[in-house]
Length: 475
Ligand SMILES: *Cc1c(COP(=O)(O)O)cnc(C)c1O
Image 1 (cartoon, rainbow, N blue to C red):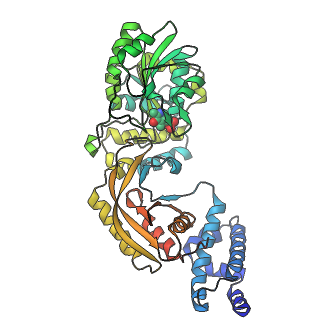
Image 2: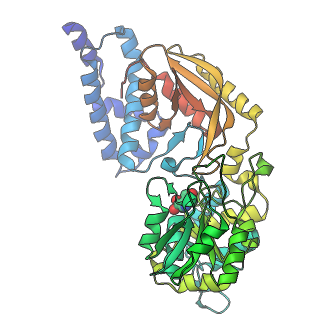
Image 3: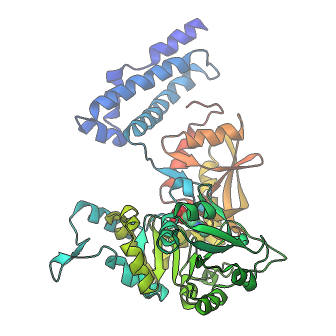
């Protein structure tokens, strides 16, 4: 035992030997070529060799030959992991969960053309707040306003940091110190940190609840109107549904009541969508345009949910109302930066040109079962050679995420993986802790890789990572 340990320790290369080996490895060239990064490389090699020394102790399940042949790949993977870790805090993650709008993984992905436009805008000066014609100061919202009006039929539009900020701004501008009437069935909490009652309070407005959880009638709104009433607020229930014995009041009905009583109607549409969903095979979802047509004064929605753009809170509606929002001091604190506006403008252009397929969210949501099956089969085939795992092609369901279509189950195909040694929990962790974090999901005794949310290069990375799986947590 002791002798075997010494033999293994002797087989470990020295720091300079590892570094000269790395000169043949392309992944490491950025570190070898850069003087500032080189010390990090040396440091990383030392750390990894230390880890190897600790690992060698008392771990002789394999033969010396096996140990020797797996040593170099192991060192390389560990080192790459160490280096990526020390490079940045924000890192690439492979989303194999099948949740398209995964809030923890950054929600919507931008289209490649959109991302390039953002990078270009980031590196150069622009006319962000400049009217090129007159040479005078301009308004940053003009870059997206016409597009938003075109797509929703609204008179005017503006953009703030996110939809939570949009609702806060609307309430603060129009209902500070006054009452806002909301149906009890719409007092939702979204993602744990956004609750309608709290946002109203933060905006300085007082909530007046009407109706019951499952039923609210127009007369409930009507009888709640008092001298302090500022407006009616409708909220999309996003991540939950009340089914069965229910009734709610439509935007159009509320607008009619509002007009008779001199009260505006505003709406938090949550995700919001430019389509009703049926063209992609989804259940009918009210569109932003429908709310505008119903006569609502202001409607807000997120930029990075179904819209498939950057994080933003978009507000569309009647010009006089948008102008009052812009005049509010809070707007300055909630304003969006040029990169967000660049990403939003480029994404909205894709809608205007009907290039929906280029928007990653819609491409992933509309993948055909045939395509999903063939992608999952490809992964299953690539993993079939790996003798440390069992793989199988299975049908499962993906999710839209982001609070959109919560009850919709998207049929999908997955590559199901079971370790021959060790548990599925350990395998899930092993995938997550690799050089590139791979997020999978566990169902029963299988780790599932849902191909719906994979991007190019992801499959190769998954196959490569699993080569190192030995049934124990090496990392
Ligand atoms: C998601 C959501 C929000 C919050 O939007 P963010 O853009 O994440 O701030 C607010 N209201 C509803 C109904 C939502 O679904």
